[in-house]
Amino acid sequence: MNVVTSREMAGIDRLTIEKFGVPGHVLMERAGVAVAERTKEFAGPKRILVVCGAGNNGGDGLVAARELHNSGHKVSALVFATESGLSPDCKLQLKIARTFGVPVRSTKKLQSMDLHGAFVVDALFGTGLSRPVTGSLADVVSLINRSSSPVLAVDIPSGISSDTGQVLGCAIAADYTVTFGLPKRGHLLYPGAEHTGRLFVENIGFPSSLLLSDSLSVKTVEASWGKELLPERTRCSHKGDYGNVLIVAGSKGKTGAALLASKACLRSGAGLVTLGVPETLMQVFQSSVKEEMTVSLSDTGHGTLSSKASDSVLAFAEHKADLIAIGPGIGVSKDTQEIVSKLIKRSPVPLVIDADGLNSITEAKKILRNSRSPVILTPHPGEMARLTGDSVADIEKSRIDSAVSFSKKTGAYVVLKGVPTVTATPEGRAYINTTGNPGMSTAGSGDVLTGMLAALLGQGLNPEEASILGVYLHGLAGDLAAAKSGEHSLTASNIISFIPSAFISLNKQNA
Image (cartoon, rainbow, N blue to C red; front, side):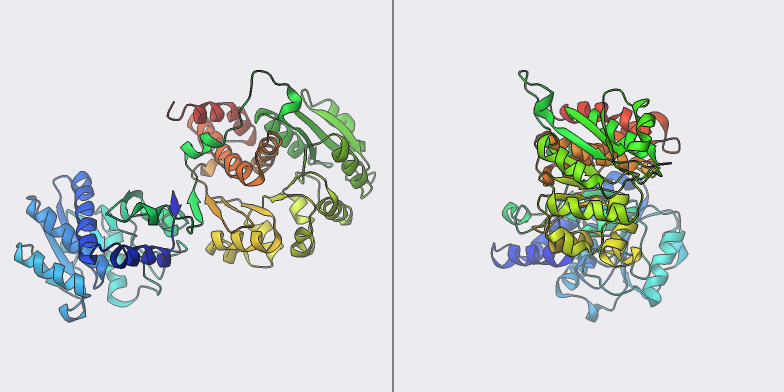
């Protein structure tokens, strides 16, 4: 499903009215009715209090109040503005609501007694809010949040930026949110996602051609789409048909990262996996692998890769490997910086770069722009900050824009890990993942993802498809593991053990 900014949604709204001839007040009517129906579903016998602002969001709330009142519910509305300060459509809905007999009053202050025993419909601010909530309206938000009243937000919880998910001063913590046409970025990005509660997307009459437009560049990744991307496996096939993956990983004290990546790669369908490791650690790896092959690479004598290893890796890629994954546990040194730089410039096969591989990239924008083959980067926010020169806080405040901007500047595919993980392409597209849980915040989880992405690339998916599907399956495996073991006890090895279940689950979608 497409995901929009406030500006994009305003454009859809405008075109619906101007090009397709649907009056604005008709859209408001349908929005209010949708809110009323969801409110009936969750409010039960509770008294309903609709709190309204001066704009069209308030108008939606007044329509909902009228519909609820007309259905026999005990409902009242508070308008936090003078009548002269209302938008034209909101003013019209106020007049209609009063004609229907809805108890409505204009006020500047919310009283605790107004909230007692009430189900609250939040229609204070809509998606166009761009400045902090302050003054008496901040007091209204605070009082609602301190109460025990359940809350349903209209379009987006008041105080949440619809573009970034950031809290603008203060924000309603809703239990449910009813939005219109398409989800907004702020519904899916944190902390907005936590304030949104359970999200419902209602079609109130926007033309499908606008909602499905190719001009909208951000989408959510859903199970049905993931199933479409699953690589096919024909009966007449052999291991060579599913990719020969070279994973360059590991150093003294960090052998586990290499093993996790390789095992995840095999579990995700790779036909052949070879671990390229420092030669002084070969005995350690030989005693730990079963299905994987190994190749020894030049090292410094201290259990870390030497810059000379790059020639062996490139030779392997020229004659055997279909792709290279590099980074898990290799450490950061002048040698690894030289290795990663040379592979980016000269590798004849696609690269997946993670962890220490990312931290070994210097002059990232220049080097990546000159890559010989496609490159997938899988940074967490700290690694992304080092690549871009921005702060971690800035990365987190604009996850989508940060990933897209860096991808466009460098030509690399970016998988920005976190909540939620965002995949960006050099063409400016972005995908918001919908799987995963807090239990996956554990050592080695990223190494597992690296192996999964490499496996899907090896099975013939392009970098965009492999990134989208790999991230989705990684999160799904984590969700299945958490359902079995709980989030607190989740480990990277648990995630690997549930990769088969993730594939099975996705294959069964709409079967």
